[in-house]
Length: 71
Image (cartoon, rainbow, N blue to C red; front, side, top):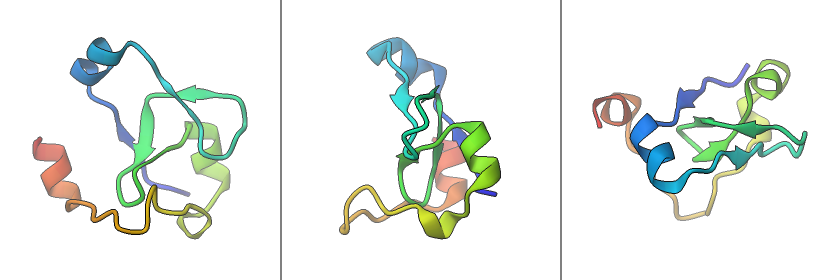
C-alpha cells in the first residue's frame, strides 16, 4: 500500500482541478504520494507498492512528512 497525503483545500480552490492518477486508471484524485510528488488515487494506492512509483523528476527533493503536514 502507498501512503497518501490529501491535497489542501486552498490549493484546489486556486486551481480548480484534480490530477489524473499516476497509474493511468482514469481516476481523478486529490491525493498524492509525498515522497515522489505523484498523484495517486486511493484504489490504486491499495493495490500498488511505493517501489512502482517514480519521482516526478530525478532532481526532486521531498520535504519530510512532518514538514508537509505542517505547511
